[in-house]
Image (cartoon, rainbow, N blue to C red; front, side, top):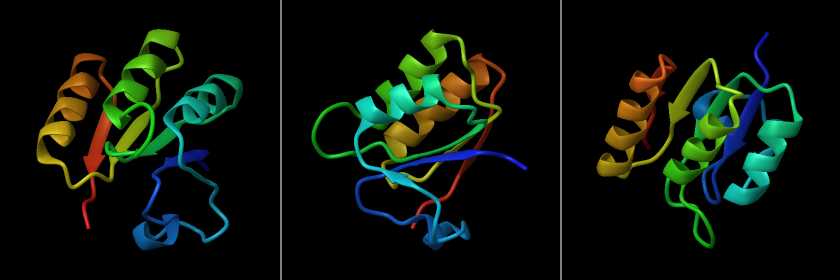
Length: 101
């Protein structure tokens, strides 16, 4: 079973068919720390996180850490950010999916 890190400041995990008790992280910097300290393998990631760092930059930092996700699910409606995340995942052979609302 995969361990999911859900990063979005507005949307909720249950909107994507995930259990309601899936933790929702609103801050990109916290998400990076949790990813590096935890045993996550799947990253649900929005790009527009409000204050602080954007989702694309969260993904860059996670990749730079060397703890690559097995799968990234982009939950952003921002088409440019979604394409950038997709291309980055492709470059590092990370499975990619997108689910906008």
